[in-house]
Each structure stands twice: as structure tokens, then as C-alpha cells.
Image (cartoon, rainbow, N blue to C red):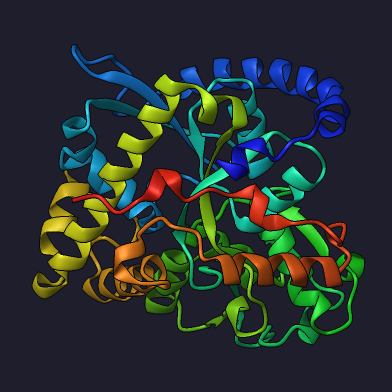
Length: 358
């Protein structure tokens, strides 16, 4: 289990002080998360409680596999009572996982690599979306942002001061020879309603999920969408846990069962394409009000794109990290000065939890 042996003694010592802070922050975060509530707040007899952190609001089609696994019983089949808890930004989610407040969080590849490279004892145990970024940059047709160079000097809305939205913008800027400080960032919500700020000129644009971008295109004729994947490789997102939890037999068993449920949900959704995703919609709508769910075009385009991302390295490799894409993302980040070079990112993930299930 090479990835779980990634931390040498010096790295662990470097992180010891930071981890004590993480534990404190994680405990605080968990108090806040408990107050947030969710459909699965109450424990269910015979099921093991597992907390999955979402660093963007759960009610989004980007979390379709998780939503289907919960609402159509795949988690329950695996003996799990999964609690979804929103936490603001990938860095906070990683801290909470390190503190043991949650089993898994799903940040982007760039957040994961930056954290591990600076000594955080976490590991990527499953790649969800693997075919480039499913984030989108939305702007107004009167002030369109359609190239990396066009971002210079602009004010962009992001989900948090750290995390995938920030690093995605940094990498896009780097393709035009621009530094991260070439634009201003403002933390905003990532909903379609924030487009009002773009219309009013208070923002030049903002970074949203694919489903939100498609919803905006359907509802707002002035919305212009730029795909970062047209210029960068990074953008996969992955299930992250702490090295300690991955090594713990009971927690490792929960991770395997969680991922089997997600794989089953992905297959269910992909098979449901023939119905226009009618059964998928029925499952999700039974508990969640998700933007775009009632728009057949948005629903179809979103799930078609996500399914292609899930199966980017083959339909039999669901949740398995693609070594080539992982290495390429690291190389791009190192060239952009966003991560130290000369490291071996193959030690930062494991596919042992994502082996093909029957």
C-alpha cells in the first residue's frame, strides 16, 4: 500500500504542529457542521454512520452519484448511514478529515496535491471526475472572459479564498504568463443568482459548477461560459481521507463500502440515460431541490458530461485515479510555481479502495 506509506519521519514531524491546529479547527468545524443538519441527521439502526463533507453545496448535480446513492438506497445496501455536511472550502474540509470529524471530503486534485506536498498526511482514495475541470467561468456577453489573458485585472467571484476555484484560476492565468495576483478575488455563493452581481458590474465573472453554468446558459441570454479545461489539465476531484483513517481496518472497510455504493450509483445513472435520466431525477427529487433538475436539457447535458468524466480512463475503472493525468496535473502546477517540483505524486494516491465491484 505504497500511497499510505508516503510520509517519512521528517514530513510527519513538519506537520505535527500544523496537525494540532487542524485538530482544533476540525473539532470547531464539526460543531458547526452538526448544527447544519441534513436528511440523515438521525442514526439508523443497524447502519454505520459516516460523514461525507462537501466543499460546495450538496444540492448540485456535480454530486449526483452521492445523491443517488443516498436517495435510492445504495449506501444502505452497503450498511452505511451517510451524513452529508457542507463545509466552506476544500482547505477546511481537509482539516476536518484530519481531525477525524469526517471520513471523506471531495476536493480537487490541485488542493489535494498542495496539501500533501506541504506535509499533510492525507491520501487520494478515489477519483470521481477525471476528464479535466468541470468548473466553468461565467461572465457577461458585454464583457466576455473567453481567454486566459482576458482575466487580467478583473474581479472574479470564487467559492473560497483557497481551494479548487482559486487554483483553477491560477493555472489558467499561468497559461497566459500571468501571476495569481493579476486578478482580484471575492468570495461569493456559487448559485445562478450570483449572476446578478455580474450583470450589475460588481463582478467581472465567477467560477461555478458545470450544472450551474448550464442553468445560467438556459436562463440568462447574456451569460458567457469559458471552460478552463480548454487550456489546463487539472480539474479532477477525488475522495480524500487521512492516512490514519485509510490505515485503520474499520475505517478502510467503510471507505470500500462507500466507494462500492458510488460505483453502483454511477452505473445506475449511466444506464438511466436511455430514459433521459428520469429515474435518476426521481431519486434525487425525493429529498433534494437541485437547480437544473427540472430542466431536461440541463439535466441531460450535465449528466452526460459527468458520466464522460467518471469513465475517462475506462468504464471498468470507476473511481480509479488515472496515473498519467495525475502526473500531468502535478507537472503543470510545478511549472506554474504553485507546488514544489521534484516530488513523486504517484505516492499520493491509491487505487486499492476503488477496485472494480461486481
